[in-house]
Length: 250
Ligand code: MG
Image (cartoon, rainbow, N blue to C red; front, side, top):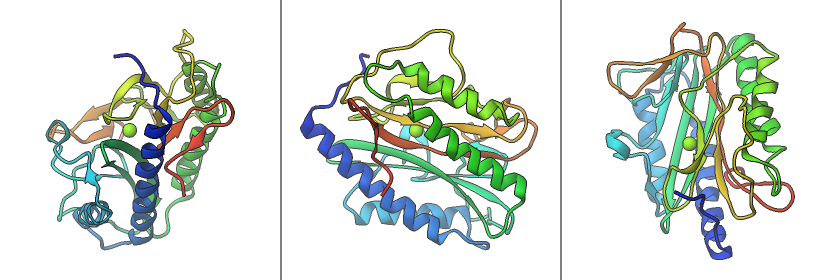
């Protein structure tokens, strides 16, 4: 599949889809507190998405049973919400959410502290977020896709963290996952040239310990093999001639 270049009309729809998602994340972030179940997070997220007249794009995606991926501590991504999983003080929780507005998808993720968390977790969350911004410094027309990957790797590696390799960012538009794949680790090649009108979900997933991950028996939840915490930060961006537009930030 070729990388889709959005028309001005499509860019407007992407902007709106992403703006709604940014608001959903904002509300979810405010709601996170000790005692909440991960299913509570999902229910709130689904309600916010549907109240905005949109469709949660993760629900039933390849059979995923919820609207929001809620991944706690060593869970990297794709945590399945459960009424039995209660967030407690000191946890970190990654929320990955997306929606469809008039046929156009948005996708973004944040990791939040539940109450007061360790300095180590605070650092991990901050550096994961910073690595996204380091990466997208290179996300402009004329550069190559893997300039983004290389910048994320260079930034994260200096802290000794593990960069998840099995899961990567992606193009996004009329489908949740479009070409190209966007690795968060250094690439030997340049990758495709970036062109205005590309919309990309850039999403570093960073482990406090080693990079290795495994899948739980539910066949969805990806966890750090060494059991140490993991953080995730993602936005949908638009490539322009100049600085990229970060569409899923308010
Ligand atoms: Mg994504």
